[in-house]
Length: 151
Image (cartoon, rainbow, N blue to C red; front, side, top):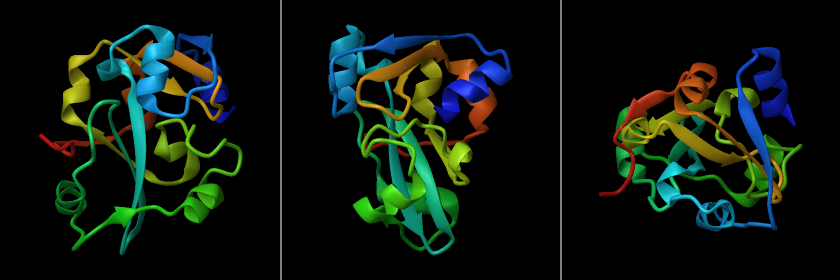
């Protein structure tokens, strides 16, 4: 997977995890016996200037109006399934890693993820994930940080 290669190339420590198939971020949290607030959930949006990957904690929802304002867009919408397949051809649909820059799109992080020392995330498969330090994740993603989750 692309994310593992980047982590290995940059000598960033992580732990690879195998689990039963999970199809939501909350399922991943349950499979790994961790709080959903430690699971980074990617949500891909599209605006007039292209795609962006929003990353929020598993229990949270992305506020599209807040994302649009942060990006300076009039509006954004969720990416379609066909767009997702095109953007992430090496990933199982719904198991994309929350690292937009690996796929040529911006990454936006909800500011509340900064409260966590570690993050869990899918890496392109419904049965594989990684656990890593949030600081290291930020280092490789260089996200735009803002309040993008519904409160």
